Length: 200
Image 1 (tube, rainbow, N blue to C red):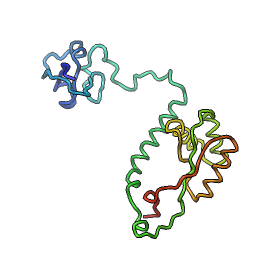
Image 2 (tube, rainbow, N blue to C red):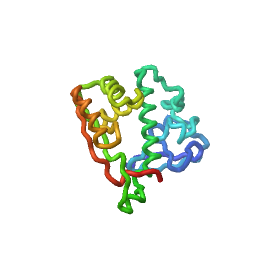
Image 3 (cartoon, rainbow, N blue to C red):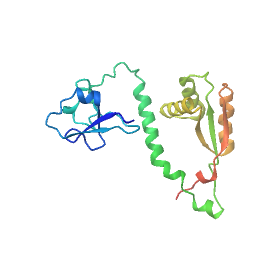
Image 4 (cartoon, rainbow, N blue to C red):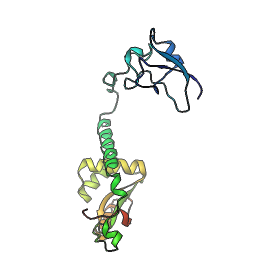
């Protein structure tokens, strides 16, 4: 915070776009409308970011690095794309469905809900079984496609648990019992009423 920074109305997309002093000294802003300012807390240099800064204003260190297509990704493991696609897909779905979690069904408000999917089956991370083990078990026990199994396995790894089934308690408990035959930990939990809705 408080470090010198430079705004260039010729190169910056908007007034919040800045270059740090080091990048500014290595860039050519001859004839540009430049102002010196001080970076506030959390400010970050935009040099090299083509969505914030014109490439002709990049410093010599960042010139040519602003294009995402130019980034070498060959060193990444082959499954990285699948993981990123799955995480991105899950994130987008979560954002789009966020509204649903804050809506209450009229039947619940009236005190007469018709609840069919009252429980969830949860898997816990035991740090023993591999991703492939969990994906295979999810396919054979719960009938999940491989991509859904990967999604659940990623959530189990990251959050230490994940929902893999929704339904009546007996339905979820049957799955948990089958998983326990393979020493995979899990539980059945009740879904909070505010999350249960019929067709609206």
